Length: 171
Image (cartoon, one colour):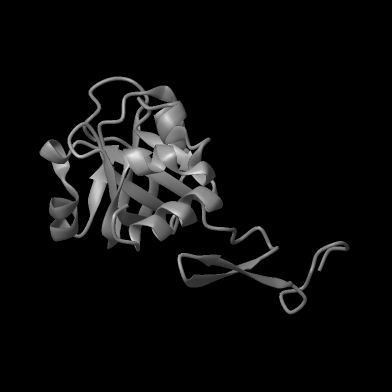
């Protein structure tokens, strides 16, 4: 063992609570906290119900550099809120990153990537854009500040607040 390294036994363990699930993490650099995201899709193109029925999908077709970079930052196990854009304008479910960024097979030119997502669960009650805009905890959420971005990073507080709203009627 090199000086300054922690042995496997000595690594302190931490637990992060995400939507009621504990994820053990270590300081080894091998594991880290779950990140949170929002992915947006028009329900007329690929609705949550179809995603849930499919059980997994490659999140392809992202052609914005900032959104592409967000895809590249996603790690296996990260959680993403699934937002119906244009029609409905509401968060309807939670997905998990199953496979990290890889070349988008639908791209005919350029440097574009995709990730694989799996559905985790539908929200008990969809959370409307109107509810998000009215909520002071969500005043700085990128969904409102960068409304055209299709893959959005979320803070743990923003993610938890949307999930909380989704558990209550009338969100």
